Length: 83
View 1 (cartoon, rainbow, N blue to C red):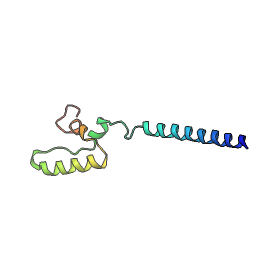
View 2: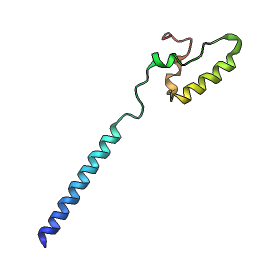
View 3: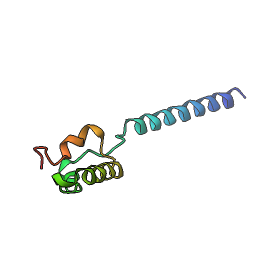
View 4: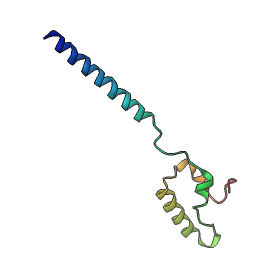
């Protein structure tokens, strides 16, 4: 009977070990793919001084739909040096 309880304990420890390893692998995976300025720039509409509001609304919608990180907005803005 003692062997059975030892086997169960070993089984539970191994199960816990595997679950911990799975969770640590999942947690370390990046949440977002790397941000590519060259691809993002192609999505942004051309800026015109005559219709700034339409541009800003479009920019915000595109940024939201494509999950642009706010700290990357300046990189894809028409006035940036990346364009």
